[in-house]
Image (cartoon, rainbow, N blue to C red; front, side, top):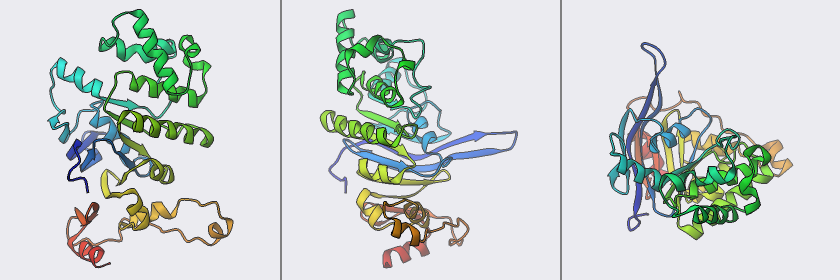
Length: 309
C-alpha cells in the first residue's frame, strides 16, 4: 500500500524527552517512525498521557525534538531554519487545537482571529480583500459574516471550534494536525465538526494527522490508524484492517472498551485487559511489518506468532 502515493510527511525515530528533575527524564515520545501520505487522514490514538499531543506539537515545531527527523515534502524541518523557511513551513502546516475555549484570544474579534495568518503571510492586498476572505472562510465552516465582529465568548464550543478550523484554513495549508479537536465538545456537536473536516478534506485535498482517544470516531474519519502506548507506536494499519484484525494486545484492549448500543451485548461482554509485563522479554521489540501495511511492535518470537495466525 502507498507505493505510488506521495509521502507528504516522514517521521524517523522521533524522540521528545522532558527533564523533570536533575536526573529524572520523561520519554514522552520515544522513537516514532511513520509516514503520512498526501490526501489521507492518519488517526493517532491512545490513552491520555501516551504522547499523542506531544507528537503533534513536536512535528509542528511547538517543541524542539530531542532526536530524530521530521521530513515535510522531503525536507527536514527540525533544527535551525531561516526566517523565510520557517514562514513557508508555518503556512503549509497548521494545527487545530483541543480546547476551543482557550485557543482563541478573548480580546480579538473573530475577524482578527481568522485574519491573523492572512496578515502575517500578506495574503490580502487591501482591507476589503481581507474582509471578503474572512467572510468566505466563515461560510466555509458553516458560520456567516455577521459573526465576524463578535468575540469568542459569544459562541458555543462547537462554533468556537469552527472558528479554529477557519483560522487554520486561512493560510491555505496542505497539512493539518487536528489535536483532539472534538474531545471538549458535546457528542451531538462532535459529528458535525468531524463531518466538516471530512468535507473540507475532500473539497481541498487536505492531509490530516487526527489525534484522538475515541477509537470509534477515529475509525470514521481515518484511512489508517496508528496506536500509541507510553511514547511508542505499537500498531499501524489500514482503519478497517485494524478493527477487523488487531494484533497487539494493547490495541485489542482499546477496541474491547468501545461501547456498543446493544444492552445484551454490553451485559455479557468481556473486556480485554492489557498487562504490559505479560510479553516476551528475550529481546527489545521492533516495529515490524506482519502483512503488507500492517505494522506491529514485537519481538522476533511474537512476529513469527503473528505471521502464523
